[in-house]
Each structure stands twice: as C-alpha cells, then as structure tokens.
Length: 506
Image (cartoon, rainbow, N blue to C red; front, side, top):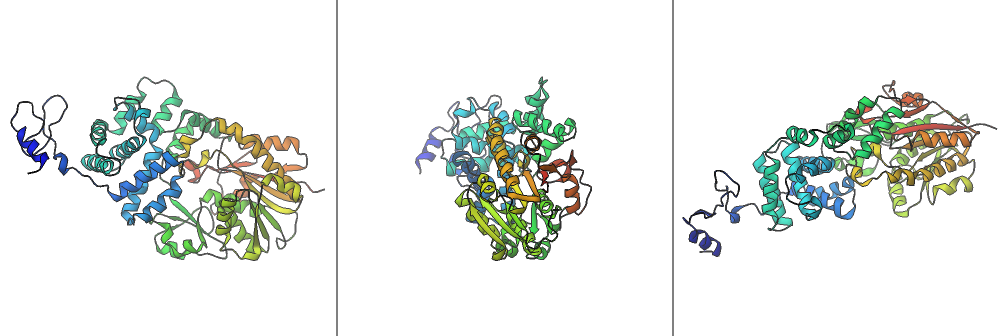
C-alpha cells in the first residue's frame, strides 16, 4: 500500500478529517462540506496540447517580449495540433491576451494578494482559465480541471490548489455579472469602457479623439473597441500576375469584398496552402492592400509606368513591398525596398522572392538618408512609418498592454523626418503615400499638416477618392479633408491612415 493511501486510511472516520476512505478531499469552504471529485493522485497532471500552446504563447509574450502572431504558428506546428485544436489554441491565446485588462480586474477580486506578487507563470495560467470560463463555450469543470492540470504539469504541483480556488471564484459569476460589479458606481465613461472592453484608459481616450479627428462621432467608440476584441479573419492577397486564389478558394476561402485579388480565409493553418508557402499568395490585411494599391495607382507626371522607379522607404517586414513589387513588375516599373535593420531586410528579401528579381532591390540603411543620397529619383514613394500600431490592436493583441502615451512623442520626430526624406526622394510630379497603422491624430494629420506648412512644393491629393478607385466596392466613406482613414468597425480592416502628397512640378 502506498504512503498516500496509508495516510488516507489512517484519517478515515476521524472527526473533522479532510479525506474520506477513497482519498477524496473535503471542500475547505464554509457551509455544507462536500468531498472533491478526485483524490489528489487522480487529478490531471498532464497538459492538454492546445492549452499548452496557448500557455506557451502567453509566457513568450510576458517573459520574452515576443509577438503572439509570430510565436503561435511555430508552437502549433511544434505540438502538431490538428485544425480543431489549432483553432482552440488560437482563440485561447489571443482571447486571453485581448481580455487581459478585464480578466486581471476580475482576478484581483479573487486572489488574496496583489497580482504582481503572483508568479508570472501562475498569472498567465489564471488568465487562460478565466478566458475559458467567461468567454468560451468550455464547461466549467473542464476549464478548471484542464487549467489545473496544465499548471501541475508545467509549473509544478504547488500552485495547483491556488489556481483551482481562484478559478472556482471566477466561475461563480458570468462575465456580464462581473462587469456590472467592476463598473458599479463608476461615473467616468473612459474607465468604464476600459474595464468593459479591456483597453488601457489612455488608448480609449486616444481612440475617441481619433474618431473625432477623422470626422466621425465619438459615440462610435464602443463599436470600435468591440471590433478590436473580435477575432479577425485571415486576409489573403494573390500577388498580381504571379499568384492565384484558386487553392485558397477550394480550401474554403471567400473572395474579399474590398480589394482585387483578395480573399478571407478561416480554414485553419494558412501555411498549409502551397501558394502561401511559395510566397505568391500572402497574408496581408486588406487595409494594407488598399493603401499600397492606392499609391501604385495615383496619377504621376510620367506618361507611362514603364521605366518608373518606386520606393518603399520603410519596407520591413515586406508585406507591402511584395505587393508593390508585383504591381511594379506588371507595369514595367522597378522597386527599391529600404529597411534599416539587416534582420528585417532578410524578411523583405524573402517576401520579394516570388517577384521577378530584375524588378526589385533591397537597400539596408536609414530611410532618413535616402532623400539626400537619391534626391528626386523616384516616381512613387510609400513611407509606412513606425507608429504606435493603435490601428492593429485586433491582430496584435499584446501591443495594447505594451504601448505607452510617451511613445507618441518619441515617434513623432522620426515620422516627420521619414516623410521629409520621402518628399526629397520623389521627382517633381511624383507622389508620396504617407501611411500609418494608427488613427491617432498626432501620428496622422498632425504630421501631414506640419509638412505641408514647411513644404510649399507639396500639395495634398484626395486620398479618400484614391482608395475608392482601387476598392472593388467603392464608396468606402474613408475620406476626411483629403486624407483617408479606415476603421475595423466600419470597413473590417486595420485602422490604416493614408495621405497622398504630390511634389509640384517646377
């Protein structure tokens, strides 16, 4: 007989004993004391592969500052998850990251110490458990058992009891009840929205300001925040003249309603598609596709596109460069893709590998120097500047917790210097597309207006009309005062901003 079973039999029948003859432990809570379902030795000690993948993603994000969208596919392949488990792991990882603010506020009411005092791995396990209990159709007993089993397998036996006790408290109420409790008596609309939609307060304020700044109603803020929390559909683009959507459509993709050669894919691991592996079909948000196409189609002084030189000034990791390269190849133009970091320049070369090599070159260097080194050399320039990424929170769920208000001030000078370099590099009569994946006025209209005040040789084209021209549907209603802003809750795209600036002919 094992030591554990001997202990169970010794305590059998003793008044107040916590184990019965089968080794089952009584509940420690007050009221009617019942025995737990399993003896400690019988409780799950293994990690369900799908939950393990989600946990590994959260740990990489928390401990290594990793990006979930880069870590997740690799962990899915490593653990050889099938389509169903891969979908579960994806929803669990992304959902726990998106909901972190709300879940932490709930967990704080269920833990007897500040959350920052918890082992970070335990906190990530609790977040995974909370998402299953409050936002997924997972039975409570399964969410509890599997999360405790995961913790016992990869963290250790010690935290299992804590995780079990905390998640039982979480499971005592549904999400709406928790939200009502968290916001009870709160009169500040920003704080309420931050708790309810799991965004930092400063981002809620920034997005409300962004809506108004781009001519929309502040009353849309809840729709925008809700769209940020919706799992986005994978957007595909077949590189014009090089790729085909046939394979994706046969695998269940739907033709995209906004952009030519685009599709919406929800069939699991897109890496299974041969065309994606070859690079002739790429994963790219349709908002990014539209702004790249608008730059490629904007009228310039040259009579014929053959012989035009195009520049992607901030090309890494290469998504827009690949689309521009394919469009350039089809029209007889050439593309120079610039990227300051060598490791990202490798990604650009990889993205462009499917495009005829005589069409493109990659330059490794500071984009702020290109205008001085190659003045008035390009017909079209795309400058997709580094930004806070507030427009891509639904695809990069961890970024909402990493960004700080100070980032706006830090990025502003760089954005202006890159745009100035692009305008120096473009020929008279040529066009520069200034692009951000943020709708914040400090990164969009403020930058453009500053440049226009300093550059009498530049005029603003109608970017909203340009987007309509390249959109399959037209009438996007994205334009405001000659710039254009796309929105997740309106266009089902990332919140991409576009300004088209033409250098006046001499």
